[in-house]
Image (cartoon, rainbow, N blue to C red; front, side, top):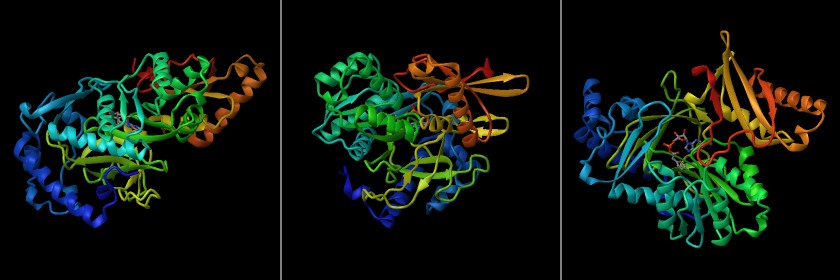
Length: 432
Ligand code: DLL
């Protein structure tokens, strides 16, 4: 049930002691080896020896994605390239990608942490794990692959795509755990139905999903369609990849691997910490990374921490599912809207399919939002009156949730593009 019980269940005092020791050695490492950090610390006249408590960490400057881009490709590495055994990169939607490196030890740590989140999600050495995340510069495939091997599970490195083949493999190889993005899991579920495969004839038990935001409604849908326990796992390449935090089968927030990552939640505008339990931007400092340590990295991901103990017995603090990124936030008629809020509403409505897209356009000076919602064939070909009623229901529910009115358009099944990786929920036409 636990991968490393002595760590995952350690007392707060013990943990904090370990964190401060590791923080000190990380600060030394970056100060000695990364000119970028040395310059930044010197500029604000901070002597790293003065950082003696976790509270002192707040005196250090943040690191942003932009800093990573400006130091492309290797300038933030804290070891010579000959010590680096693996390089990953995130494509980045805007311009230059960010490049990260791992030493042999980093790969060991990463495998261990991926093993932790997989174990928390139910995977054991008896499982057959189908990794349907992309293998490549993206960290999802390799990260979870190494974790599953570390556990001793039988790993199928199928990568993403070729959905019919995924299903054939799932049948023939008797896959028990599926690992991919939640949107790909839904596509696999829909394809199963189309192929006439009875889900009960499969051996699936667990699904470990992550790399993109998803709602509780989407989890329920996936769990029902695939007859599995679906858990959420979170990570980002700048910090390591998958393995930063993961849900246990209680499915109530993600345990952050706090012995390796120090987290803060800040108000993205004032940059001040928010009280535990309040939503803000997650900021992460790595405590054990050798090749690519980051200090106070602003993830842009919005979440809140849960300090109440979890029933599973793990002691690490949990984060709630990521509701979106600060840069995903739409400002419509002056109101902040996250795609995840729209998703949560749509999944509650009878007759809609779990596929949607949000189109943002500019008419004159005003931003206009249209939510495209796929509906079942019966409704689509139904009389106008029924369609209009459904549109009204969706509009009203969205207005209650969001506080503003948006346009809703019903579209036929399969109109919205399916994805094998991270879903693209928002089409922003204002930029073109
Ligand atoms: O997505 C790493 C990963 C792979 C995590 C597989 C989990 C499973 P990047 O491509 O660098 O790395 O993207 C990181 O994806 O900052 C979040 O905005 C988003 N993200 C990752 N996991 C979740 C999640 C991988 N569980 C960015 N829920 C992050 C919501 C997530 N968003």
